[in-house]
Image 1 (cartoon, rainbow, N blue to C red):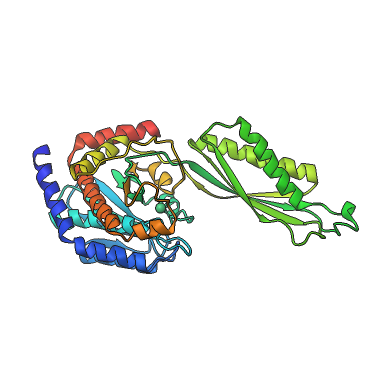
Image 2: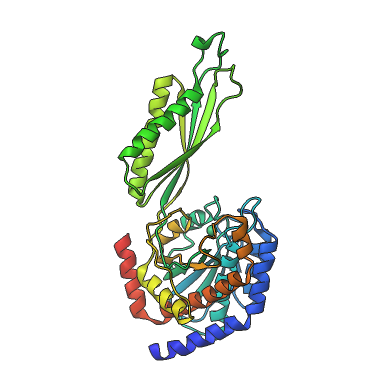
Length: 392
Ligand SMILES: [Zn+2]
C-alpha cells in the first residue's frame, strides 16, 4: 500500500495548506484571549466548533470537564488515531508556553485527513485536553479511559529547539503540614511546640538525603506557611514539595523517604504531621517506532532535528499518563532562537510570530502524515504495539 500513501499524504498536506489562513487566524485569536487551566471555554468552544462544522461528532463536556472535548471523524473500519489539543494559558503571562499552537496544529491535522480524504480505513479523533499547566487535565481524562484502545496519540509542543523525543520525569506533589502549639516566643517558649522548626528540619533532612540519590531525582519545595509573627511560636506551618524521577517506581520510593523526613521532623519537634499526596504525573514513555515515522515525515517537509540528549533538562507533563495507556509521542518544534526560554514574555511573542505559525503548520502536516502511516501500515502498527508492550 506504500505506493499510494505518498499520494494520500500529498492530498492531506495540500488540504492543510488550503486552510492555512483559517488555522493561523484561530491560533492568533486563542493567543489574544488567553484562558487559564479549566477555564478555556472560548478556546475549547472555537476548536470543537470548527471540527463539528467539518463533519466531526463532538462530545463536550468530556469526563466531567467542561472544557474538554472529543471530536471524532470516522473514515471507515480501522484503528483510531488521536491528536491532542492543548489550549490553556499561564496565569498573568498568557500563552507563554504556546499551547495555542498545539491546539490548532492538532485541529489542522485532524481536518487535513477528514476534509482531504473523507473515506479512509479508521477514525481520527481531536481530543481537547485542558489544564496542562498545573491542572493535569490529561490525568483525569486518562483515568476516565478516554485514551484506551487508541493506536496512536500525538501532539507537538513548541520549543526553542526541534527535538524528536526526550524523557519527562514522573512527578509527585506532596503537601506537608505540621501542627504545633502557640505560645509567647519570649515569655513562655517552653510551653510552645514550633511547627516551623518541623518544616525547617524537613528541608534539612531532605538536603541530607540528596547525597544518596541518583542524578535523575529532583526534589524541590517551598514553605507555604511559616507562622504569623516572630513573637508567637508558630502552631501551624506547611510546605509543598515536588518529587521527580525518571522511573515511576523509583519516584514512589523517594517520595516515601521524603515523607519519612517529615515524620522524623515531627518526632524531633513534637509537632503533629499531616501528609497529603495532591497529584501525580507519570513518566513519559515515547513510542519509538511512532517517533521515527514522525521524524521521516517532518524531514520530508524540509525540517531538521537538533541532536539532544533525551535525559537533558527535564520537566514533567500530564502527557506521561497518556503514554502509559496508549502509544504516544510528544515531539518539539522550534519557534524561535535557541536561547528562547519557556514560560517567558519572549516565548509568548514567539507563539504568535511568523516562525511560530510556520512551526504549527508544519506540525499539523507531519502529524497528519504520521497518522496516515498508522492507519494504512499494519507493519507499523505491529512495531508500535511491540514497543508499547515492552515499556509496560
Ligand atoms: Zn506546555
